[in-house]
Image 1 (cartoon, rainbow, N blue to C red):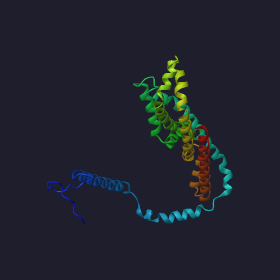
Image 2 (cartoon, one colour):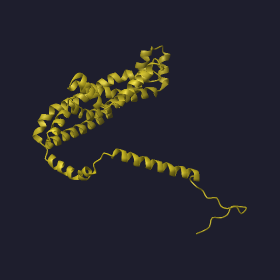
Image 3 (tube, helix red, strand yellow):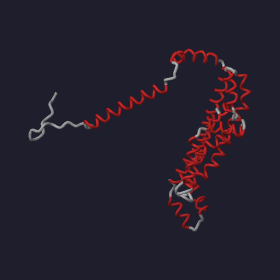
Image 4 (cartoon, helix red, strand yellow):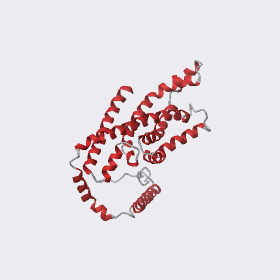
Length: 275
């Protein structure tokens, strides 16, 4: 192997290093601290774990899987109505969420809010509050207030959708082309006319896209709302699980899977045509 040539003047050759010794030591200590934190977190999460049950899990999965087959196809007719309720919960909840999220988004955007000091923080608070609480928690609260049924599920989906749609929409509003707004304002248009003719056309494709995306998500979320009494296919799923009717559980899961596949196909087709 050839030796590195000395630099002019007899000075020792310089060796290139990606990091200095101090940086290497800092990186090593960071890895040590990260691994120590992961070990502590794993110990904290598993301190009440019964490892005998974990070791027996493969056998239990095999046993439950054997009980779930074959599906109870005769049960399909009984889940058509609950599945239709689930679709209604997702659809109506999404539409209600859009209706509520659009004004909140305009109030939260810097370039459309009437007040950055008072109104915008309140609108952002609504968005953050909606995104912070899962739809299942909303459903639990609404079932306690309104009683069990589809209405609680619809409102729960709507309240959860406000934060998702409102956040994406107000960010889209802030990123619009300001030149179009200036051109409309130069004609003497009012504030409402400027929003209708300069801002709304720019954010409409984004709104359509996020509405379809949220509807697709809400179909998945609405399938479990029945577990807390908010209507839909979740009621049948909870009843089947409670009575250990595993073939019926399989039928319900297959119905949910088929519904999600169809919703994905519909969403893709609609987005291709509208956006």
